[in-house]
Length: 280
Image (cartoon, rainbow, N blue to C red; front, top):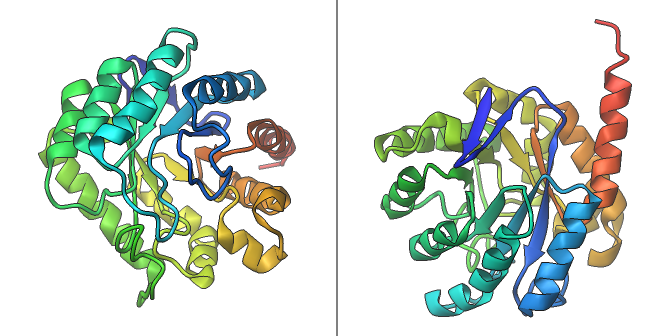
C-alpha cells in the first residue's frame, strides 16, 4: 500500500509514521497558545523534527469542542509564515490542518504537501478539487457535526459500521473529484463527535478499517477522553496517549498524530521491535 503526497511517497508496511503537531493558535486545548507566534512555532517544529517526526501538522484554527471559528484571513496570517519558513528548512512533508479550501491552496502553494481535513463530512467538492490539482496527500477525518456542536450529544447505532460507511462514501466522492486513492489517509476522528465509549470502541475495533486498504491515522494525544479514564489533566495524559498509540500501531494504524514526538516514537519503535520477534 502506497501513500503519495506530492513529491513524497510512503510504502506500507513500514514503521508507523509520527505526525508532530504544531498549533499556531492562541487557544489550543493542548498547549494554551505556547506556539502562537511564528518564531516559537518554527522553533518548536524544528525540535519535533529532531525528536523524530516524520511529518509536521500545522494548524491555525483550534478545533477543540466549542471552539469559535477564525476568519480565512486570520488563519492564513497565522500559518503561512510558518509553512514558508519550514518548507526551506526541513525535508519531511508539511501538513496543513484546515477546513478551508482557500487556506489549503495557499499552504500547498507555500510548500505544504498534505491537507489534514477535519471537515471531510462536507458535501461541496472545492477542497477535494484543490487536493486533486496539487496531487497532495489528504487526511479524511470522520466528525459528527462541527467543532461547535460535535460534543453536544453524539449518537450512533453502530459507531464502527457508520464510520466505515462514511469512509467508503468519501473515497467514492474523492475519486469523483479527481483525488486518487493513493493520496488518501483515513482518520476515525477520536474525540470529534464521540463519547468515551465511542472512542474506545473505535480503538478496540480499529483493525476492521483495514479492509478499506488505505493508511489509518490515529490521534489520541492529550484528548479529553484520556482524562476520563486516567483522571489526568491535559499536560499529564502522555502515558494514556502512549498506550493508545501502541495499541493503534499494533492494530492497523500507520500514522500516529502526537504532541510528544520523542516519547511516541520511542514507544512505537519498542513495540515494533517486540513484534518483529513474534513467531508466525
